[in-house]
Image (cartoon, rainbow, N blue to C red):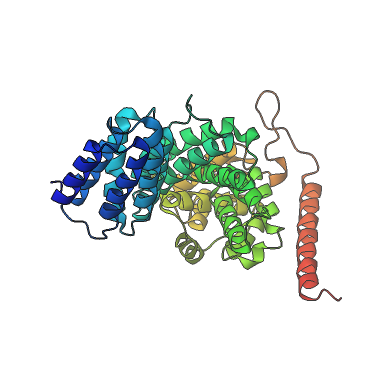
Length: 416
């Protein structure tokens, strides 16, 4: 219920014979009285609604009402209590909505303020929905391309906080159409990070790793942010399906001189060097993963477990020329049928080279050199000089390891 003081004040303003240019000062006085109170009294909502309704009425024209509503928005922003700020902002937004065409600037300011308040309360979906109501295509005001992209990316990031990748991607795609017109480096970085997070959430780990790694080289970011991005790049590379593409990604990350300073370096090194991972190492690594990175796949295993099994299978293919299915199952920590299924799938996809002798229950590896080499008919080409290629591969591995050690020595002893 509107307080007696506010009712009398409004009646006085509306019935006043003062010139129209003098009335805004009286409205400001009433707004200051209502909004200066830090306690959410029962009269707060009705009082604010009554004043704003009067401002939007016939007492003032649109030209006089716009700056007055702008002042009201600034006063609402100054409210310290978040709940009270949301109450006041929501009330003002509801009253402006029927005449939003005339007050688009004030509507946008209110929505921006409410989004901030909802974000503080970790109500990310509500914040995103409020921002969606901002009129970005308007004949009343010109909105710069940078501002449009900033709003879309902000909505995208809010949806990502709630793991709603579908909604997030739709707004990222809008920003993508104007990306070439963006002049602010911070917007470009926000776009790159959002894109990486969406790829990560959609389990496109190889692409996400590449996006995070590129992001980690940005000179605009501070050192902590760059290292966090590098850590995410390594995590995604570890979770990516085993094969030549992931091996190249791991090599690129392993050769990054900063990699040895992140917690994930241990598992990165083992994967790059094709060493088998123990259950304890996998369990420790899983503690740092996000929920979507621990989600179950179609066969009932988690993304991490599947990635580790495929990696260990790839490592086994480099250690052995052939191995029994039961022995492979023991190495991978799964039953024989599942071990054979993983091997068959990786052979079919060209991620390892070889064949399966089901009668002898034996898996025969041709060596990683032939991975991905298929003829026009889809059959794998025969590889000549297999022993020589293995020798070359091992020499390359030793040379890369020597180069890494030399780089570490140079970092520690630059004088030498």
